[in-house]
Length: 137
Image (cartoon, rainbow, N blue to C red; front, side, top):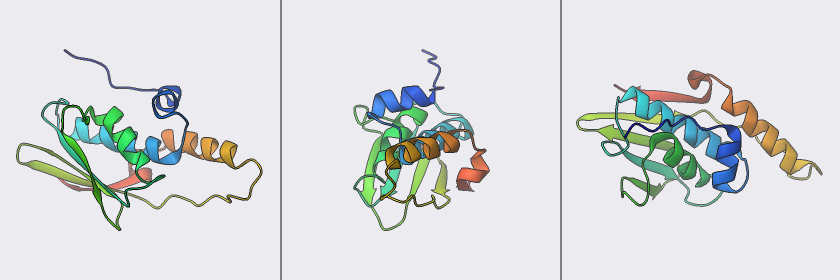
């Protein structure tokens, strides 16, 4: 079944419960991997390397939406790491996607939540090479 995997910024927020930079980043990484490896969600495997806590772990939600790898299918896992990146493989092909550092926003800003949403939305529209570096292929 060919199901489109293009999700809007509103879809990401609806799935995750709010809009943040890490779900957007993960979504874009997962979508890139799915297309670059010419895979379907049953052929692809994803590993999310992060510190295992929010907000970094939110990247896993985005990767699920972008790649179609899901906890239910058992083809995605979170691996605790000091480094932040994702690996994706299909058969013998493997890529590593490392996000560029995200900017830090002032948590004391009275409009912090709005600033987070605006920043996440700005990430959604960036080119892949502005968001992350890809190794492999």
